[in-house]
Each structure stands twice: as C-alpha cells, then as structure tokens.
Amino acid sequence: MRTVLVTGASSGMGKATAKELLEEGYTVYVAARRLDKMRDLQELGAILLKLDIANEEDIVGTVNRITAGHGGIDTLINDAGFGTYGAMEDTSIADARYRFEVNLFGLARLTQMALPYMRQRKAGKIVNISSMGGKIYTPLGSWYHATKHALEGWSDCLRLELAPFGIDVIIIEPGVIRTEFGDVLMGPMLERSGSTAYAELAHKVAEATRDSYQAGAASPPSLIANAIAKALKAKRPRTRYAAGRYAKPMMAVRKWLGDRAFDKALMSRF
Image 1 (cartoon, rainbow, N blue to C red):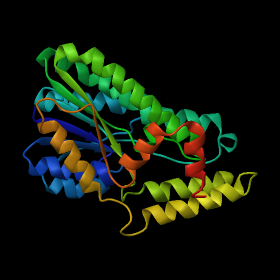
Image 2 (cartoon, helix red, strand yellow; image 1 turned 30 degrees about the horizontal axis):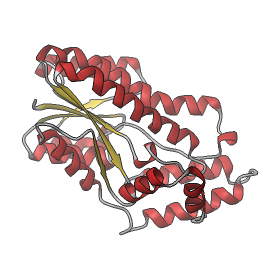
Image 3 (cartoon, rainbow, N blue to C red; image 1 turned 60 degrees about the vertical axis):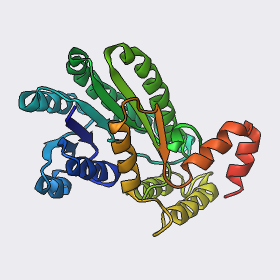
C-alpha cells in the first residue's frame, strides 16, 4: 500500500505528513487549492494535484488522475479542512453549510471515489484528521465542533462497514498544533462577533487563542505526521491517535467530568 493521497498538503499537518511519507519511500500525491504552496513537496518527489475539496469535478479528476498513474489510492489521508469561530447566532447558515461541505461532505465524496479500488484489493487505509474538538467543545466554536463531532461518528460507522474488506479507518485527534489554524480562527471570529452581543466573549477567546498558539506553546505539525506514519506501519492500527498540546488531558477531563463541571472548568479560562 504505497500510493498515498494527502489532501490539505499546502501547509501545516498535511505538508508535514507528506514530507514524512516521502522520506519513508511512499508514492505521494499531494492535493490542495494552492499549488504554489506545494512546490517544495514537488522538489522532494511528490506529485501535485489541484483540489478544491468542495468541488465535485476536482474530486473526480483527482481520483481519475491517480488511477491512471498508479491504479488507485492505497492510503487516503483526509486532512483538508478549516475551522472558523463565531457565535452561532452571528454565523449565517450558508457559512455553516460550507463548513460541513469542506470538513465532512467533501472528504466523504473523495472517500467514496477511492473505495472501489481498495475493496477490490481487500486492503487500504483511510486516515481522517479530526481534532480534540471532535470530543470536546469550546465557546464560539459551535459550527466547527459540529463538523468534527460529525466526522468522528461518520468515521466510526465507516470503520465497521469496511472491516470485512480489510480496510482500516483511523481517526487522528490533534490538539493545539503550530499551523495557520489560530490565525484563520481569530480573524473571522472577530469580524462576526467582535462587536455584537457576544463581543466580550469573542475578545477573550481571541486572547486565549493567541496565548495557545504563541511561539513555543503549540506542538509542531511533525508530531501529527509521526502519529500518522506510525498508524500506517501498524498491522492492527488503533482506531484513534490523539497527539499535541492539550489533546489527551482535555479529552480525558471531558470524558470523566459531567457537563456542568466541564463547562465551569472551560469557562474559567475566559
């Protein structure tokens, strides 16, 4: 299973994962909207594909290109996605739908396209990049957390469906990772809620986010890349791999505390 497709490879965890797998000798296709951000991966041997995960034609074209070149996708790493915050009331339903389109429906369609080849071979791995946010919640993150909670449940069902075909479904749950996430989160959040009824909370969440993502505070993307590489090597990979700052402790606290206790502990930060 040496042909890998990594989506969202133009930065952060996707790019780090592509580099890791290239070093280990995989045939790596990398896909993202920003081709110019992946030229360094091309120099390392990756094959570049332009992909808007919310575009059906792009998805079909991506799979057809890999099928023509290498028969099909042996390992699919669904990293493409984004997270923006803002009060639920301040977020349009159109924006909310688009988040689901990118974070769930797009990767689901890509997975559908990749599966016939894997089933035929009775082997394959699907790695879905979720988040600790798929198991916990934070204020002003309702729509982002909704997509990640959905991805977790979707992945669990898919794991059961694909097990008879020898296909593994693996969930990666990153914590606070040094990527563009913090910057992408804060700007739109303050635009949506920085001057509404939720303004005070929005500015406090922005400040806490800056503290979490400041230099040296967040974990490096390579930590997630290493977790993915480990999962791909395992004969029987775990269903979930949590890694990165706050991931394991936050999910443990959420698991063992009741809702009200978790609410109180969380909001004490703000």
